[in-house]
Amino acid sequence: MGRLRRMTRRFRRTDPEQDLQHWFEVGDDGRVLRQISFRGGGPAALVAAAPAEREEVRQVGGGLAVQLYEVVYGTAWPGPVVEPADAVPVTELEFTLAWGRARSHRQCDVRHDSGPVPVGARLPGTFAVSPWAPGATGVLVDLGLSVPGFVDALILLRAECPWPPEGTPAVFEVIDIRVGNSACQLRLRPTATPAPGEPWPSPAPR
Image 1: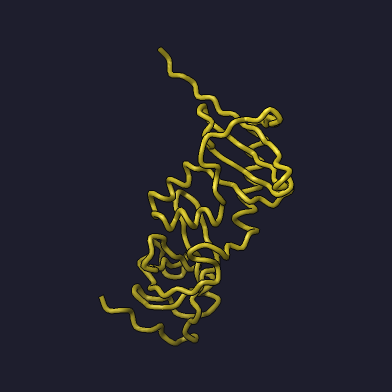
Image 2: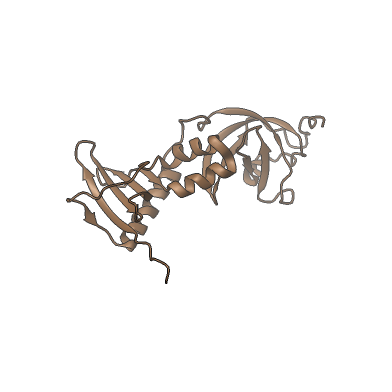
């Protein structure tokens, strides 16, 4: 016997009481594969979440990563969704376009200043071993959390400071939360950098 073909349904419905328009992509059992929720049907998305992606993030970064994922993309409906009689079917292309708009809005246009590690928070950490050469891409940061930190190379180059050696301690400000490739990352900037020609504090002893 051939394998049964899974059916994916896509539809949208309006919740006038909450002034929300929900878009659902659901599997055979009605469980949500992807969900988008727009405020008033406009471009402001409150949710752009996929439970499978959330689970992948959890496997890499644990409970903290899940909390950060939900700050960035919101929370999808946890159980099966029944398609109401007034639901409007949407095509795969329509859903894909709406998904792209919603994800872009949640990642780029929303300030993620809530949750366990909000934008603006200051955290102690140490510059860690990075796979890139000094001056390229950036530097990973060990914050003592299940989610890594990252300082973009441009921040250090603009400060005209020396490249920080592995183990150098610093205090970092969270400037963004990134979710991608099944993982979360805290984007950081050092709250202070040495003057041009001056060294960083000595690396912490191992």
